Image: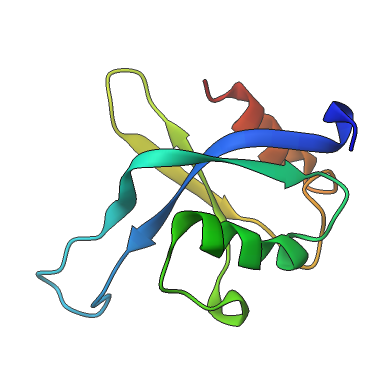
Length: 103
């Protein structure tokens, strides 16, 4: 697979064990992001199982989606839009540009 056909970035999942509890705080897992190589021309849905396996996340592919997160200088970060699971990453150019801009 050609390097032009992949995009490597760091990934984490949001641990929101009880998303309806007002005292619950969501946090990113694992604490240290892991590296994942996305295939740019393959649907996100076809890659979700690999993402979940890499993260060792408790999620199921059919119940999962990916959201763009951009780290900010000085710590923290901001959540952006969700990726469309039925599209490829290369078809979602605006989101891909956000990911590429994040060092």
